[in-house]
Length: 174
Image (cartoon, rainbow, N blue to C red):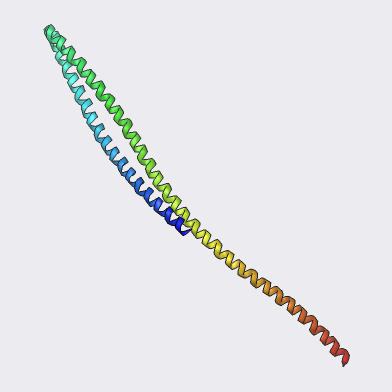
């Protein structure tokens, strides 16, 4: 039983170390995802600024009647829109990654708490088992005392009957 407890303790400590590394990795993932999300937000804002600037140039070129520049501005706007869509998609993917990593972190922490709860429950169970064994020993002792008391009572009844017979015989012989 002691060997089993040692093996169990070693297994739990190895699992805790592994769980601790997983939690640390999940925290790093969350930080990395936040940085990527901030970068994506900056990129989206920059793309929108560039797109607004290109539209302004397009409006000016249309008003001025510069057809070659209008074509070029429209091509730039298409490229900026494509970049903006890609950055928005990256931002959405990074948000999803961040949510997943946060969920993983919560789950890993839940697992760690659950393992701690299991260890605590095992300690309490071991204590309860010790108490039960002690109670059984005490009960066995109490049963022995009870049997001795029952024997003493039987002996005392026998002695009482004998003394009553002796008394009755002594009274008759007087």
